[in-house]
Length: 222
Figure 1 (cartoon, rainbow, N blue to C red):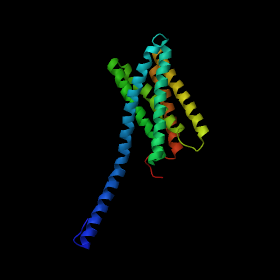
Figure 2: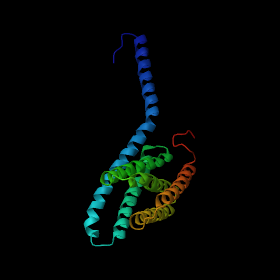
Figure 3: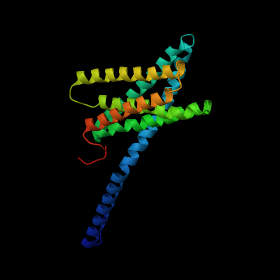
Figure 4: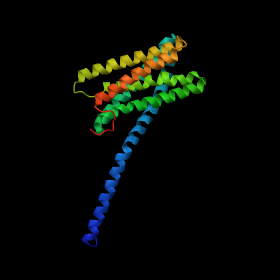
């Protein structure tokens, strides 16, 4: 670019630097909201993949006991949720994001749970749908927190794989057990008991997630 004089050159360079500085400022400000939006969108995609997968295996389980379908559906959900956590771990490393951004998987899980319960409410518009938010949502969010912890890199591949497998087994068992009780053996106090147990588990897992990454906010300065 040609300049009429040196003063104009310096003025243009100063303007360019100011624009870059402003862009970086707003990018830093908007980054948390952008990451949360991406996490929520990932949860929606996960919900759709879950629906497709569960629909695909439904004919195979049609002649089996109901508990088997409940266990299989829980397994599909947990496998997909773990897959998202693994993909997030790779993306975080490649993009140079804060490791604690893995905790955004909880946002994805909440988005998935909200869509799942919205679908349930559309099919069965009863009060039962409302307590499911307290009963079921912590299961999704807790599993996401567990996977965020399990997929954290610690430099020991063998131990990490073992931790991931154990985490998947634990989340699948917990999820399937609550599904079976809610569907096949409900009792009057189940909403309160289930909500209390799942909220306690979620609280413990979120605290462990915060401790694992060394700070309480994924956007806090180190």
